[in-house]
Structures are given as structure tokens and as C-alpha cells.
Length: 136
Image 1: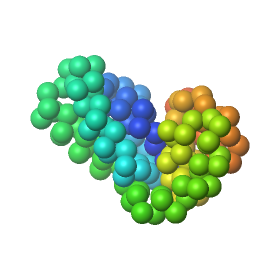
Image 2: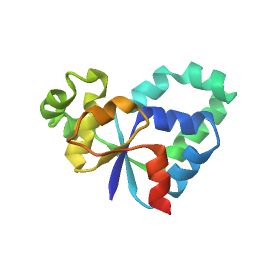
Image 3: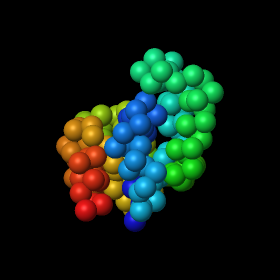
């Protein structure tokens, strides 16, 4: 089974050594991370440093470590699904079109705690709590 991981979930694992990081490093399913979101992480690097107290070196080591547990979805594959994803999300949150496109491209669910994803019914969205229940 494949699951697309939302950037906020991934950033949470960078900030805190907690349940989210444990799930990522022990997930029995394939986690898929859209390539374009690597730029989002870089864009929020200073905020991550401030919240995590990580040095740049520690951040880079942790980022590379966590990326070992996910498969990077190439943007060219995701791009083919942008139009149907836009049609799904245009009245909900256009910023998340690419997550829906990634889920459509890989025919899978999304792991996100953003409630607005639940306002669509095409792609299944799992919260962290639901992900934890998958392990039980």
C-alpha cells in the first residue's frame, strides 16, 4: 500500500522526535513524498530551525535520514494528474492540488491532519490518529 505524506506531517517529524517521526521510520507501507515539496521544506528551514533547535548540520542529517523512508514522486508524473486534482480541490484549497494529483497518480491515500482534505470524497485521507490505528 502507498500513502502520500503531507508536508506538514513531514515537517512535524523534522521538528519533534515524537510519534510522527516514529510512524515515518516504522511505516510498513510505502510513503510517497511529492518532489515539489522538497522546496517547501527548504523554504521553511528557518522556521524549522527555530521550533526544533536543530543546527543546519543536524537538520540536513535528519532530513536525509527521514527521506530514506519515503519515495520521492517525480513532478513530471504528478503533473499529468493536475487537472483532475484541480477540479477536485478548486473550491476547497488550491494549495493542495498537487497532493491530490500525487494520490491520483499512485492510486493511494493521503496522510494529513488538515481537515479541508475531508471536504472532498475522491481521495481517501487518513489522519495521524487513523494511521496509528493501522498499526494496531
